[in-house]
Amino acid sequence: MNRREADLIVIGAGAVGENVADRAVQGGLETVIVEAELVGGECSYWACMPSKALLRSAQVLGAAQAVAGAAKAVTGQIDIPAVLARRDDFTSHWQDEGQVRWLEETGISLIRGRGQITGTREVTVTAADGSITVLTARHAVAVATGSTTSLPEIPGIADVTPWTTRDATSTKSIPASLAVIGGGVVATEMATAFAALGSIVTIIARTGLLTKLEPFAREQVTKALEHRGVRVLCDTTALGMRRDANGVHIETTQGSVSAEQVLLATGRTAATTDLGLESIGLEPGEWLKTDDSLRVKGHDWLYAVGDVNGRALLTHQGKYQARAAGDVIAARATGKPVSDAQWGTHVASADHVAVPHVIFSDPEIATVGLTAAHAREDGRDVRVVDYDLGQVAGASLQRDGYKGSARIVVDERRHTIIGATFVGPDVAELLQAATMAIVADIPIDRLWHVVPAYPTVSEIWLRLLETYGRPGAGASG
Image 1 (cartoon, helix red, strand yellow):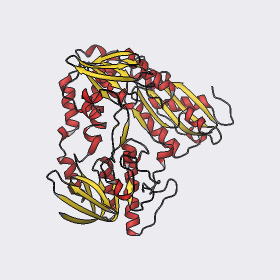
Image 2 (tube, rainbow, N blue to C red):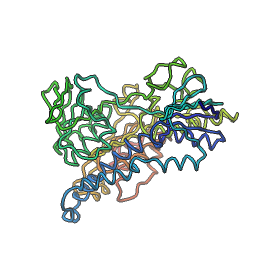
Image 3 (cartoon, rainbow, N blue to C red):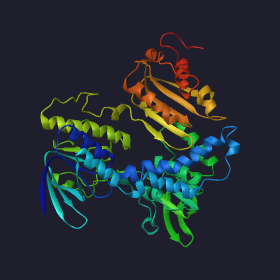
Image 4 (cartoon, rainbow, N blue to C red):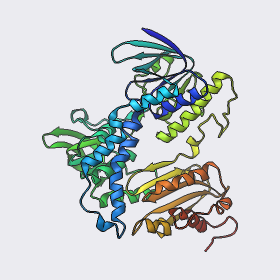
């Protein structure tokens, strides 16, 4: 058994854990990071990057086919082996040498193995060969173990060997048909990708698709999926499943669905089951609840960052939390001032009011802040402003017959934007401006002076402001 001390121990070397460690090292702390799988984590190898790589080829093809003068130059079909090969390049072929080299260059020590908390500021690491290293943190332990696929309780599920997200994004072949259980982001994106790559896709959603978003956004995506041949079964529950030589057969409340493969996309659960939480009085398998400086409540030495805390299950939001956590751990360890008021250096305030999110469906959805319904539930006096994105000159130049929608939700008491949603091709690039407006609390009157270039899709901001009108001046024509 080996023993070692460090200022900070980080469990989980995904994008979030890497950022916590990096910021702590920059703050002068000796840092050790523990990883049982690949350095770089879920996003690099099984989630963000491979899933978007699978989607991109069809997006580019669709864009070319929608522009006269380019459409006739596009012949043939998607090259499936080339798509999968490009995906493999983005995952570095599931090798992490580059990420390990970055850790070394940054001054972060790596210990491979499964880390478990075995006491206050103590982490025991069991390597693949069974060797054990006991790590003691002088100041803090940060948990960045992420989340895993939540497996629904469906009779027969264990016998059909269903895909999880990892299987779908790393597949070496495209199934002739795919049944997707779930109606969230993963379900929608993977249905989009596999339909474009030639699968006959059926979505089985217990409620509807993307139910937390603005109704017009989810309606447009549902219609687009159906237009592309995806069968969307909403308000449908899977009752049981079995596999035979012909594939998987799923009994649902709307009849039987058969497919070569089934993908479970029914949500995520905290990856804390085998973390040793019981040794410090916490419940294994539960989300680790934190304050805004990412410190676990009741344990002043323990931090939980990224998906594992359940605040906002998005890579970019986890990395934002990681920057705050790494900096505050270093500040507390070295006796420097802590800036933990709202919007301070050492807190993740944006988790509550401005979480940007892009769903890479076709059409794309980009959203940040509150929906109109959520704002009203929160007791806000709001005005909703909608505009047809296809009427913006810049959008019409992007593709013939451009279709899309934009909405802002305005707090009428303060005349500031508290929510925005865009639906249409490539709308992800509109999102940062909306996020800035919300975080900076920019009054509508000041936004009138933010002039969008012509002809760009960003002209939608002028059209939304014109539709809203200047506060106290009436609507503009």
